[in-house]
Image (tube, rainbow over all chains, first blue to last red; front, side):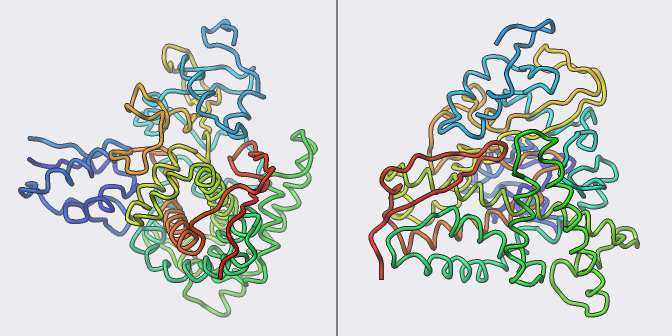
Length: 63
Length: 397
């Protein structure tokens, strides 16, 4: 499972990294930075939570 | 709601005000969603469904403008960054977003805790309070003054300026205009004076950081700094008051949910998101179409204003199953209470810190409360807050 970020869409709502700080972080603007490419085993639920809470649909999951 | 010539049903302005002022706007939101677009006379159109609101907020094609929205807020220049369209808008957000990023806002938590405790201390022993007057109004204004390094003695001045701009006396726009203009003039004079002082005596607060902000080696002009500060007064003070009023009125009337978050503080962050979604304290945001478009099959002509109804988008159960009920643990909850797209609320992370701390600290001290007997809640129009929120609770130590 991989997380894909469309940085053009991210507007800094910050939902992803507040919900799943092990997978997502923020840059100086508060925009999303991916911490992992492959989602580690056991972190799938957190990954989906970060992705599904994005109001901009800037994140997606590729199985 | 008669079908007009364009196929979109017609709605009275009075119905629109109820999106904010109704005791329970969810029923009206549901009715509105039966049509994707409603015309409100010649004034504007309402966009009601989640998918359409989301697409318009995101505006990938540059179809909508904020700068073209005709709205008298007493300002003589566009408010920055709200009333600026891309691409110029980006320059300002590059300076401002880092100042309001979550990691920066988290540093304020201790100060917010102290302010919240001070406010709660003042009424906890008495067994009653007007939550609106004694908590929801002063908290965000005090936080703002601290953040900007402005004198705390200016609290009352700021509150009256904000009210004269957002809710001036009078009914018609013509009656209200002089209040807005007078308040606007005072805001400009106030910040002009403080900017001059800062140049003589530099500080390290947020105002100083804005003054020092650079994009591509260029600093903001004094006018630009003032236009940012003006927006902060309008956008930063009232909206947190509105959110606090809405959330605490909900919790006063829904003891099961209140006890749920008292029993488990770890759900406060998700409860904040859920109650913002449910209440949508900013019920709708305006845009102007820059070209002829169609929304939900309804034509909108270039130059026409639309109101994107965040409230009805947030409770649209066609888009998100179960959106018509409150679940404090809701996940996912990609709500639009802070808007979306490039104009996503700049202060959203500050608001979150204030709301989380307020809920946690208030309930640690006063876990059980209810509306004072005989209370009839009166919600305001425009932005959704309360005129008063009288609460009764066991007089505490």
